[in-house]
Image (cartoon, rainbow, N blue to C red; front, side):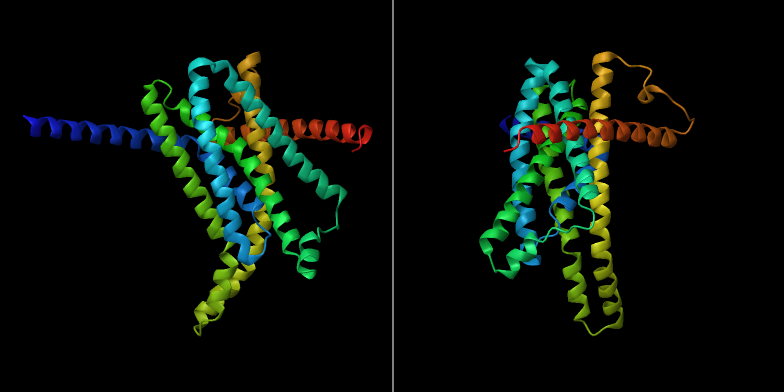
Length: 302
């Protein structure tokens, strides 16, 4: 009798784990778009540091990302139970922040065209470990702040896929998603930032094929980082604009927005149009906030 009860318990546990795995897989699929943006943004954020400090910086941001999710998951779960009305405005504030960060990068690149940041070079020249560590701390802090907004969006989207499930299942699915995406995203970021080191390693081999591959990776690494810089900035506008677009629809019931129009019979084409629409909203929102912040700084200099 006891053996039968134990087997029944194991069967229930196996069924529960299978349900959690299936729901987690669905949740991750639904967040795929934001995950791609998260990867691009974070790879761009943690790039351009000293080769020997790349992995420590990625590890520091990954720990910060995990801490973000440890905070976000219970807060989102409790908010969905007791204050569901709070989730949309919080997401919209985060969306505005992403748009602002993207617009600030674009504005900085325009106003400082041809001007390079030599702070890291100066620190290296003066052999100042303190200055280098301070630069790393700023980069890590910025990456963790951006990760918080993207993680919040991912967790809320994941929660929407299990909204009808029991609280315990919701919590387990969000925990699996939070841990899984942190490992996946920052594992890929670590691989991306070490591509050039792999190229140098291949160059030391005597094989012609290895040498060719090494030269290709050394060419590919900076090209990839430049691409990720552009993609990461675009991702901020797309994700931020998407959050604002959904928020406007939620509050104003704007059924006539492009988000509800099917201009083409092809769903892929409609998806492109929707992303363009979200991007334009993101650019406009970011430009407005940058203008307001610049105006404030001009009239209230520190």
